[in-house]
Image (cartoon, rainbow, N blue to C red):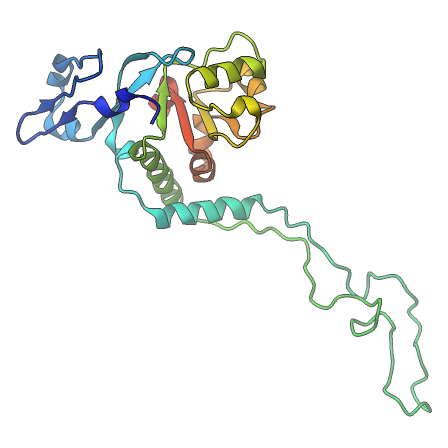
Length: 261
């Protein structure tokens, strides 16, 4: 999606030729000696992806990824459950209407009990009167629900595997910015064709930067961009944050964040 390198990753065939490598357009060669220390069970769990320099988009090497995290089965039903759980927790729950005890007005009996030949009338603040209270209206409450922690983690793994399988996962060595200026970040995104429309402030790619910890310059540079956000891997893991991962088109992670997840 961002370059020819993503399509040139070498594939493994454990039953035939153990390592097959497509070196058509890439200058990076895998070091086969590194895999002599793995047994077959460990090799099956591995996936690879190129990692790049953040400023120049130059391929720097190949990073091994855990198949249990980036190669798990994609469960859209589990991701939907986690997203609904997250959105339930985001609801404010501050909606409120006034009942008959809270609306303004007198509490006297509005009409005599007898002698009118009409229906009996008590309080004029009853729900069936104009200006009366609301019967069974919404009250402040929490909309938060609960799901098991195992479901949260399975949804998180499914989201990361989805980004990897759709070529929407981009690895960088680190997110080093000299200045906290949004202009500097936009120049990098535009130069690397990650977000070519960001400079015009129109609907370009939405990008989520995922680092091991918050970086002040990157956080400040993202504040003025509606579709570019920065989070930490710990926040994603602790919150089971499928919503933000799937809500951005491009997930950009540094090597420390990869090691954490």
